[in-house]
Length: 288
Image (cartoon, rainbow, N blue to C red; front, side, top):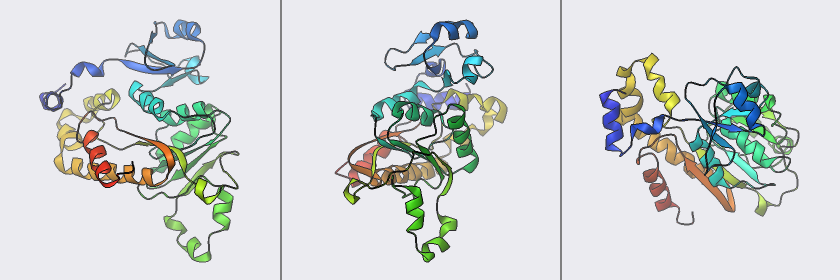
């Protein structure tokens, strides 16, 4: 790693060794998968279903991956889902859903109950989520909207009813409305009382500098390490991200059902993008 990034880690009290392991999440069939990957799997004791593998092992071409038995996903991402404590029947909002690994884990946890709503501002990234849901047959209770997560406001009600109740004036504003790109056949709810409307669980895995992601850091070998200052360490970009993170968190809380749970996470290891954002949010939301 270049001196500028090592200095960044030092300032935040971080050990460069955190970037070494790679993690996967498995469905049943470990012995069979170990044989195909030609490596042992190290169980992550604090995260059910997760295993560490050597970083050089490629999984995309394996039959296990193609059959949906392996998901490549960071342990940190799995920890955020575990903290959300999803229960059968929950109505869950993933406010920054792309590229989709966490969305698939949420869908797996819900099973045949509840509903899952995924949001992302980038259509091509959300389309990748749709592909993953279809590949692993996890989309029956999921709907995906291309939308700004800081402004999204659709609650877990039946989408066809939501559209039929809109006035002509509302329809004229449709260009700014969220674009529905996927709607599972069991993903809408009908007959909720007004007091019941809201999401039981909300995940705000916010856009960040990605300095905690080994895959992102490895990209600098191709982008050039000289771009690190602009992409990760630039103060102006960081300030804009901090405001975006706070806005995402605030909107996620607004959509949360009374008594529900929200998890805020990033793949940055900096205090500024994590503890400080949460502290600022709590200072304006004493009921959280």
